[in-house]
Length: 163
Image (cartoon, rainbow, N blue to C red):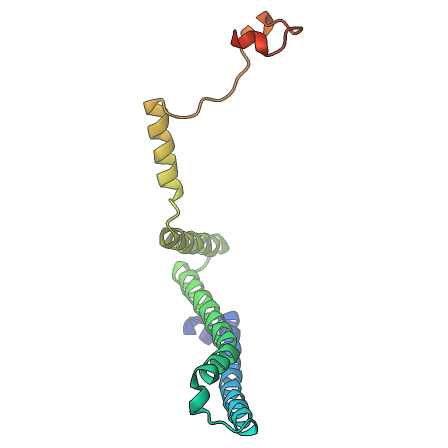
């Protein structure tokens, strides 16, 4: 049984997330039904038609269903991520160190892609920029204490330095 599970490429965790996504999707479909029924009952109670209040009806239905659709999408996404991580682990096969390295590499790749999408520079780009600043002399110098502190008169205060 464990051999067939290893060959399938999926992990128990990814399957759990897929099941959660399916359950939440069923709840979303039920919520659509309940929301449409509520809107039609509301229209009948106040003597109007659903087509007369179409904008409010659509807004209400979307407001009720959208959170469930987002939760289902997130759960499906987590399932997919865990499935990909499991397949990377299986490709590297064998040693726990290799599996660990694969997970770290995959996480780093995902982080770099997310940062690039958000416009955040990578660590390599930041290091290159800092090196270029150092070479050009435009980097902020660090504040250090020098020998002029001994020459200052402590009784006159900081005003004596400016004159």
